[in-house]
Structure formats: structure tokens, C-alpha cells
Amino acid sequence: MPSAALPGKPWVLIAAAALLAGQVLARHAGVVEPEAWFIVHLACGWAALALLLRLADPQAWRRGQTDRTAWVLAGTAVALCAFWYLGRLDAWERWWQPRLPAVGWLRPVWGFAYFSIAAAIFRLGVPWLLADRLGLTMRDLGWRRAPSGQRTWPVYLGLYLLVLPAVWYASGTAAFQAKYPLARALLDSANTLQVLEFATYQALYVLVFVSGECFWRGWIAFGLHRDWGAYALAWMLVPYVIAHFGKPLAETLGAIVAGSVLGWLALRHGSVWLGVALHYAVALTMDLLATWRGGIGWRW
Image 1 (cartoon, rainbow, N blue to C red):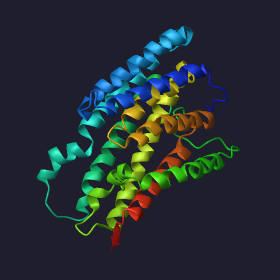
Image 2: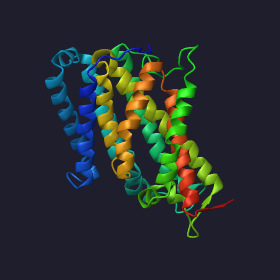
Image 3: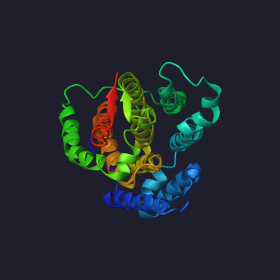
Image 4: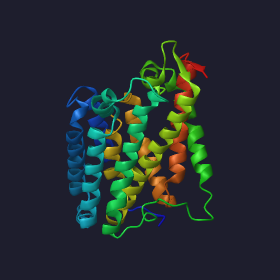
């Protein structure tokens, strides 16, 4: 159900965000640098958050110690570690790419298809398998439309327009030009993108955001909100931000704000779908702006 009021001490949430920002900066500085140590980053982030909550709000800490909390966090760890180690492009390049033909229809997109389908399997499959055990339906996890009568889309449109100048600026910086468009693997020797390949890649990209929002905001935030109240957002932010490791520092730090806003809105409106639309709209805009400002051409 949509939540009109989220209990919790605001300063504790701010402190949790500050701890997470410190972890991001430490990683960027080379502390526990290898991305292969995802499970270590996740454990350290959650341990620091648990200590903060236990000291700052003992009553909420006791209230949050439920079997449902344990299952949601365990399911989150299993899904994310499985996806991180088995479903990303480095796994594709190591295990599958050498076994497949060197040419083929839309071959440059195959690796991203593997990534997006793996994201859906792990990030949608685990909640689907565990929700019934926890007495939750998919609707309980925000996999539904916002209740009728709520005009929520202007809020998301306003947020898109608000971040658009920042996306424009970032798309021209060296750090973002080196990462985006995310379809850089599709570029040929003439620095051009094939239109059909790019369109196919974008269709797969939508699947990434569907599985992502249903997992981050749906499974974790909705799954923990009954026991943790507003602190469910902090539990969700730790793995969400850590999953951005390897992206530009500004984007990883920005994920703390973006994840908090998207999580709060999802809980407030009872649905994740407009969050999917907003998240993908920003990502598509970044891809197109980076393509244009990077001098990348198009071919049919």
C-alpha cells in the first residue's frame, strides 16, 4: 500500500547516506579496489548501516529483526552476487563469446543481451520465488500501477527536467565520454553506430531498468518497509550504490540521491513503474547526448 508517512529519524538516514558516500570515496581511492570483491563491499556497507541503526534507533533496530527481513536481505545478496559474478559482460566474454561464431546477425548486441537477460533472471526471479514464502504478492512489492486518482506523472516529469541540465553537462565531460554511450562496444572503426543494432540495444536496456526498479525499489524497499519503515531506503541504497562501482564517481555518488528519491516516491505512490520510465529516460538522454557530443555518427 502507498505510505503517506514513513517513520524514522531523518538525521539517521542522512548519516547512513554519509557513511555510504565515504565507502564510495574509499573505493574510488583504491581501498578494496577490485570489483571482484563485490561481496566484501556489500557486507561492509550493510555492517556499517546495521551498527548505525543499532546505536541511533534501538527501538527500530529491534522492530526490524524479523524473519522477513532476513529473507529479503539474504535473497538480495544471493541475487546480486549471482548476477555480479555470472551475469555481467566480463562473464560473457570469458565463457561464451569464444564459443560462438565470429559473425552473425546483430552479433555486437549478443553480449548486452546476455547481460540484460541475466539481470532479469536474477533480479526478477529471486523476488518471484521468495515473495510467496514471505506472504507478499507482486502488488505488495510495487509491481502495479499507482492507485487511480493519483496524478503522479507530473512529479516524475518535473524530476526529469530538473536533472536534464546536469545530464547535459556530464555528457560532455571526459569521464562520461569514456563510459557513454553505454553501447560503445557497437562502435565500428569509423566511430559510427548501426541504427538497428542501437535500437535493439535500447530495447534490451529497457529490460535492465524494469528488472532494476522492480528489484531495488520493489523487492528491497517494499519488502523491508513493513519492518523498517523509512530505514528500508538505507538498506536498499547500500547494494544499489555499490552496483554503480566502475561508473564515473559523480554518477556513483549521484546514485545515493537518485536512489533515495526514487525509493521514497515508489513507497509514497505504491508503484515502481514511473520510476522505470524516469530512470530509463535519463539513461537514454545520456546515451544520445554522449553520442552527439562525442562526434559519433550513424549508419543504416
